[in-house]
Length: 389
Image (cartoon, rainbow, N blue to C red; front, top):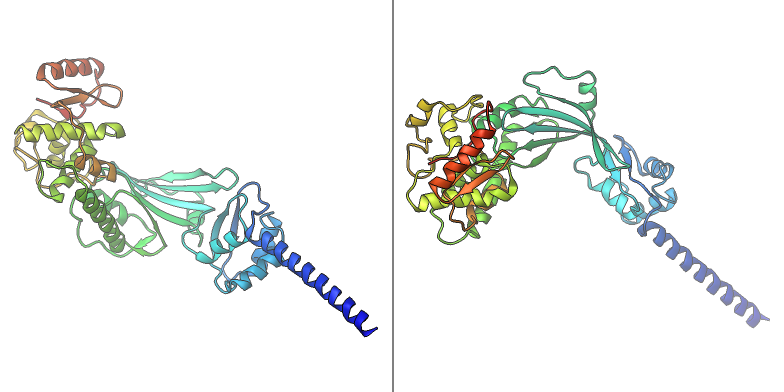
């Protein structure tokens, strides 16, 4: 009888162990397998929230199948004390394990409200956007220039939320003076900028920040990124370029940046400048004349006068030979790479073609014909940039 009882107990134990193993396997699949969410949702983790509250919120949103398994998984990975407040985009099919990784890693909010301070060539704008989690697209809620306009109604409350994502975006071609003046007007930043950074030393890019971030530290990060981009590009440059230092290449990149906004034209514009330098021809590019007049402080706002084309400044490439002494703006990565890898072309001239791009020419005769076509198109329009004769 005892043998029979022992046999039954052993059989029952095996059944229990098999069932327990199956339960564990099922729970593991629920935890690290694809989640039930079919479209993205925003999860807002409040200050002082705990995993119990967050797990119930996720279950209510349909992002997880079991709040209990979610909490057990967080405890097993020893992350229950690492919850970070903020707004998180939970993508379709996200596993519990992935969600826990998101909400314990911290960093900028990936959902909800975003305040992007856009610093452009001609000015700056505060852009308030809300992420539609279902589509993954941002919906613009407000836009204004903080140096000239009054903030729209409701802007302060929306932008002042603790979990709003703050970002500064520097556009290619803005001058260092423009950047400093714009950052002074950003009321979510703190600290002074003691001097305008060297022209060209700031990397056009997007910078995630926290409220109260230091302006000088942001400038330093812009310089660090630009220095790294320039060093890497210089290391891989083409042989035989007519500039001897990374600094000269940065000057060239700034000319390319200011001459064309058409991505596929950058290396072709670079080839024109390289060809002219190699032949000892003056670059004769309008943006350098403008920089010599404005010093990079604001925009000219009108056509270049004949007297300005003839005035000797260190930047007037109609008068000086070779490159100007410094960059004339902060060029982006693409223009820096174009300066390091120009096309091989016979072109010595280019002029606007009326489509947003340029017409290129090898000879002065062909260039003059292109100029005549452009002038026939531009009747009454502002003077455009281009390399003249």
